[in-house]
Image (cartoon, rainbow, N blue to C red; front, side, top):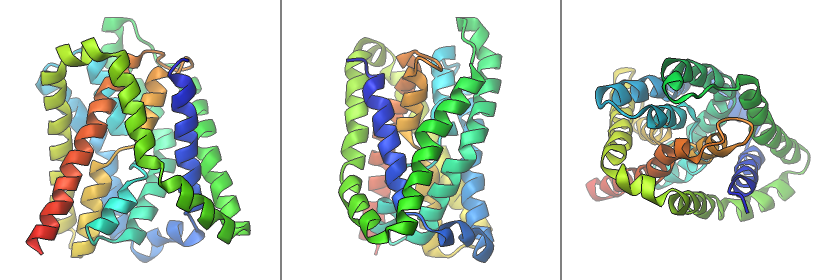
Length: 281
């Protein structure tokens, strides 16, 4: 079975689960707490630039440069809400940022990836079918989110029960994807593990450090700062893997390798951060 037959259903299911947890108030939070929402979204949207700088600074291979920018373009991961709860952060803010970044990046991701592939893709003969990418994002992300929101609106109790069950599969599903692609590209990963591991770790550490400084400078509360650090650091790796392996977009699993390593490292780093907060308390 081709991996894409596993990737796309898992991504769609994760987005549907996200939609089941959303209400109108989650989007209206930008009016009530604009500074916190703007800070979180800015930190999320600056990630591709950080990824590009990291890739150029360490002279990353064009294939992995595109892959690194790809994972940086993706929205916050669905597990960020759980991490925010564990860190005693602002869960309402986390839900709103995940929802808004998931919708905003539907349109920013194709544009940024178009620029990235135009810059380095010619070296490896890669062009981005931007309309295919946009349509895939709409079908596998926006549509499931909207369906989930609709069920939440009309059948809130049913939505809560479904979300409770599906949320238990979010992290195992992501690890399943990472495991499948690790096995498929074991030789490439092991031969480039040093430089790629360094690249994704550097990207992650710069991102969370920037989020911490930014949230402090704009005067956010402690719970809000913790949430933004987690939200900026956690990316939707399933989306990056789906785009990389999709026959309608890149159709090349090598572009997913930075996302696979990032998925592993973001959990290590952010769990360490949560643990440090608990010890500090």
